[in-house]
Image (cartoon, rainbow, N blue to C red; front, side):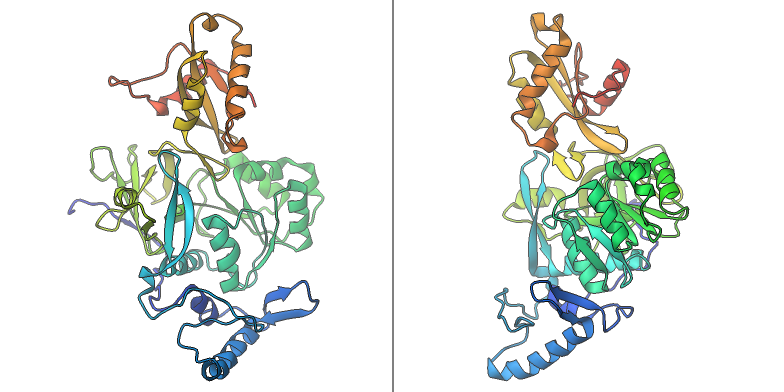
Length: 462
């Protein structure tokens, strides 16, 4: 333990209360910059019915004092603001680090979903960490259109809990459609855009954007992958020359790194350790990697945002969260001399396509089911800032000399009929003489992008 190189966040360490539930935290501890007349809830079925932050606190206090005696309520009971009783689990005064607040499903190394248990403490910590890292970006004056799913950790925290706490204004889209998104952003005079790389690239190039009033946008937050420098430059031309582009890196199990406004942007960097986080970069030999070197390693993180464990899966929990409190992310990272982090690969070998996780082994198994395939390897290819599933296959016998284009189209159709749309081989499918394998026969997956690059096939088959 003595030779560990622990990188601590340069941002303020938040104090996370251990005696509040999520509802209590949202109600009692709004930041000072949330005006009392800020509307927190509107009922669109009954025009004009709304409640402000100030009214929310007053109603809560009145109901607490009046109803406590009338209904024999006890500490922690919750009632509806407009008179409808709610039936949440009873909150107690126990340590909120031990009380589950919800379950988020995440993919494991095999692609099987795992139930990620999140405590009230963890979710409160995520809110405090985001605010401590970017106080000028998460406040009562933020306006945004939000399209990611509320079923994922990103949507729950950034689209629901964070704006409810800070007073931010959020318009939700039931499904993403580019023209509708950018026009709605102009309508509400959005100050913040949350994008994935493909959407950012289109925004920088689409002529429709140039005719819209998007001059109020000051920040762009990108998830899924880092943005290329040319995309950032393009967005600054069509939005604002001083727009701040922020990248971050995290998972359902914990918040890891974030970029802060005012920090010199490095295209491709995933930022620095988030507020309250400690980071270790551990090499294959178990030793900690020095900063500024060309070596990378698996990213370990210790933070108040970490999950409780995987529900009913003690084995996976022990493999992911060690006894010293370090989360083994499975992602390969390096840190430069300035303390900026760079994501270089994924030890878990999962491909992340627009926030969806794709297990290479699943696609390889489907390809190998076809009689024309004797070997298959799947990897992720980065194109325009988006990671795309791609495959290399070794064809059987006479098919190796037949019309390869027709055979590959047949194989691609075979796979696409059996998987969800986000698992399709959007990076292409390529015929090779052999796959790169080690002395033990293990597929060297990280070598596949180099194999594809040597083939010189720049246009993927979609």
